[in-house]
Image (cartoon, rainbow, N blue to C red; front, top):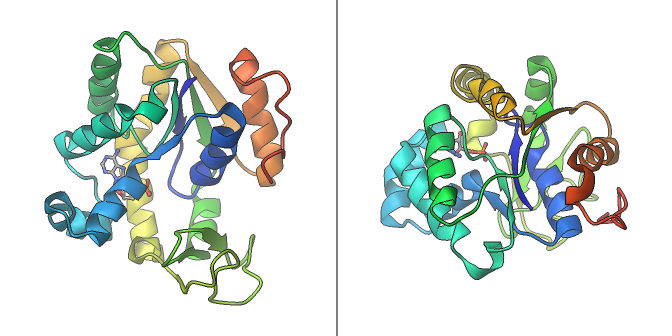
Length: 226
Ligand code: AMP
């Protein structure tokens, strides 16, 4: 199954991609995670993009595409993948289409998670990430058992710099101007399904599995991965 999850920052794409990845047995490939790892490890790419990520602007296409191409060529992604955060513009979608075509493959389905802007701002400003294992929490919707400590590994929880409210609003503008046109692009290709993204994560997951139809094994049950 080759799947793209589309949606504004904070729509829950990461959480949903992880759940679907477990159900379908294909890896989640999150461009933001790959870029943040490059920044942490101070690779040549990481040094170049650190400031761009901090501002909430988009990294140049050729840099992201190279990173994604390398990840999709790894053995575990050969049977399929769930893309989260990529593509983020029509040119990126075209580059992805050409890359897959060259490998005799294509995207099966695109799920667009729809969440209103004000809900996004509320959600993201409560988001916290573990410095050690990158697990995510939300102080309002999904709080850790101990404030500021990760339930899984005890690591310190922090707020991403690009999760501050002003940056979130800027990222939403970037999404609406550059990424939203992908909805029409993939609707035109006949592979887009829009998913209502407001509600409990299990409800959203159920809607997604329904929209995926036969692409997910018939015995997969919503909430199985919790
Ligand atoms: P995310 O974790 O998906 O919200 O991504 C965090 C940041 O990484 C974004 O605000 C961008 O600066 C950068 N980024 C992630 N994916 C892409 C992409 N496909 N194209 C350009 N920049 C990206």
